[in-house]
Length: 156
Image (cartoon, rainbow, N blue to C red):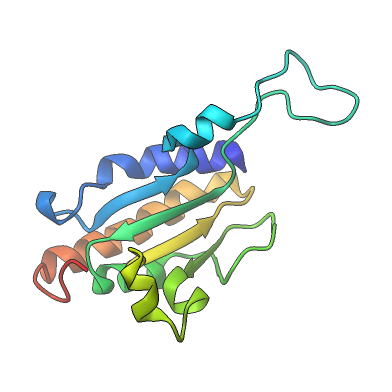
């Protein structure tokens, strides 16, 4: 899951840039890019120990995609061919429109803290063979929507 998430983040990063670059995907939030997390991350071990500890620690399988518009978010989410809903440690990839599912009655409150309805939280699983294709197809849908409707429900 760690390796799959890193692979997807690296695949999606060149497509991010926000509305100032006329891109549908504004930003990717991933622990690898958080200096506070890296500073506290467990050190790699030379080999796996008898307790089953990881040889190389990872950043987890969770990342968040922040889109430039709610419409681009919907286009991505609708085209993303993975299970939909929150993850509680599943080994399959899941995606959820985070604010709509985590704060359905507190959207204005969430927005005050920088959480808008144009984000999708992804919990990456083990289906390595299909993930790049599936996320690529969904990004194409978001980019196509954004290119056709650049002023539609613009930046949040």
